Length: 136
Length: 318
Image (cartoon, rainbow over all chains, first blue to last red; front, top):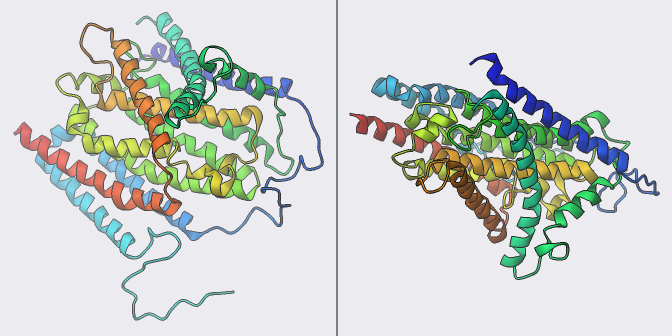
């Protein structure tokens, strides 16, 4: 691709940035200014905010982020295979199937270990283990 | 197309996309009104069509408020990210044989990259607001969007395998005999679900579910910055519809009595209508149901689709 073919896209990009800047600038210029008693307080449905909003988070979000890294890397390999699909033929198909099956096993493991459940865990395979004590 | 006309096309595309997104806010409310047996906006202009203009003026004159407790720079940056990312995504959409801003051999990857960037907008907006509702909404949407992103890309690989290219023009041309919605119906189904979740439209708008999080990640936003989140969402809806047309419904291909551009617009319009109907017809799932649908149903389904497509295509090839 020649660099001149990129020129329309660069202009388009500049126009997009300009549009966004104009929207923000206009609303800053035209907007009314008000200051009531509760204007500068966080909105929590009428209740006065208590404590910081930098709260501790449910571990599920962290797990999802880890799974995303694993499975999104997988998709990168599959992208590379898909684009050369007919050239690779059955040999490539067999290779990628091995890869997909390995990832399928990983998914089944996550599923069985309860990592994909939210809230109430349905974890199996640890029937003999002592129950986890709730920390106050 | 010559460079000059491509340049002009880019500017028309920008105006068209933003105009259509603004118009959709009225059109959607109007249609929902019809389907739910009520009026919807019908006061300003013919059929209430000038409502868009009135809304715009009202939003422009609203207080441009940045919370003193928020991270101010990130707070202002967040809504712009989604609008910019979605508008850039339109650059690779082929509207007719020679109407496209950018026909690169990574067109599809460019589109996927741009939709992924939208995550930042929602996550940063939620984090920077320094509000508990916003934080929860931002986290939810980040988890939802990255989960559905995994198989959104994978669901399109069947199309890439059959057409042998990431270039969207090449993919459209590969559908001359048969649209991909026929042999890639599983891919289409998964892409549809993932598309709704990625643009967090109803029924998958859990990040901003007003019944539990007031407004989710944009609780603290108002005026034009709130409008930019909405604009980004509607642009995302249009972009997803354009991509569905391109990848599964033959893009600009169609019988010769209408020009290719008209075919493209007609198909895209029908898909947008379908998205609005979904909003009117289907209730929201719970958040944990949404996540388990993604990981336990959609992801295995895409892998099965890949395996089956590969085997059948190679077998047919001999």
